[in-house]
Image (cartoon, rainbow, N blue to C red; front, top):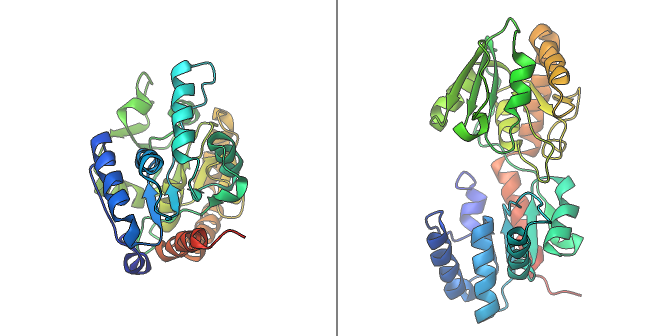
Length: 310
């Protein structure tokens, strides 16, 4: 959140390596320093859990804890290991004042899985990572990117044989064992600068997502909109708060190659539709998804968590 001056003025940041040892060190710093601040805000499930466990040992010091980016595992109720892991997570986070999610459809899931009241799970629309959203010239190829819960199997089936070039940016695990169609140029694990260059040169963007237990896809949807690229995405929980079908993007049935193929054909063949969707998506990003708007919403939740319960 360094892009928001409002956030930078309001918080003191503590960072550590993104591994278990780093999470332990970070949580211990938060425990030691929490009395100097009004609220503790963590980013990431590991950091939140370790901090919650420390608080159960050393007390909370009267400081509310707001947790963000708590990514849940796939539901595996028959797995003993998964049930044990869920039990630890529930114990560690049971006294969390607020949990922030990035999809309104996740509130009930997180409330149920973490055993928190629905009022303690807050939806905050995510922010674009593009500092100055603006329309860019339409390119010549279709584009897809991302790793979390991406359905590249459906995408490859949808675009195979089309008389159009596609560029896909993925991690190797997401495309392992898949046959890449001849009209797809695949890039794996490339630098972000290269990803952004490829995104800015696209004609339209496809975001194929699996219909799973949690949301994902918001980052690419918002970054595409910030470049003025029309988006066709799977109609799943992660994007329904970010795309209104036919207004600022297209939503298609998840896991259906023909539905995705039809959506791609609409964007590829209709200049007026592409322009209308791109303009509306850019306006939505500027209106609802800036860094400062995201910061203000999170700071408001943190302030509310500090108020005494009535």
